[in-house]
Length: 139
Image (tube, rainbow, N blue to C red; front, side):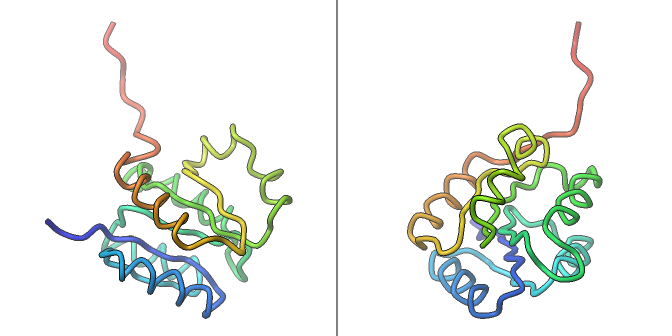
């Protein structure tokens, strides 16, 4: 069985390194990105099973990344777990309705517990796509 692929989109190098190492030790194929544009570019070649996304990054923030991700029908089902230092402001910005619309499977505020994050990653990948392309319903 092939390992699930996880993209870690995090501009803080030490935080990215900790997440990448923990995921690799858990058997995932992991690619880390220091910016959102690099992750979007890589998605033209490879679509991951899950994305861990920081929201506050230079050049392209997490909201813009999510908007571009969900605008592409090939990427609409990729689950995203937000990992960010925005804390309560983030929770206010991403209420349950907008989180569902953007396909956000979960939100982790920094600092976070690695074992809890790993359990959530495993559960999210097991559940599969968060959003599915609209399909006509049978009448």
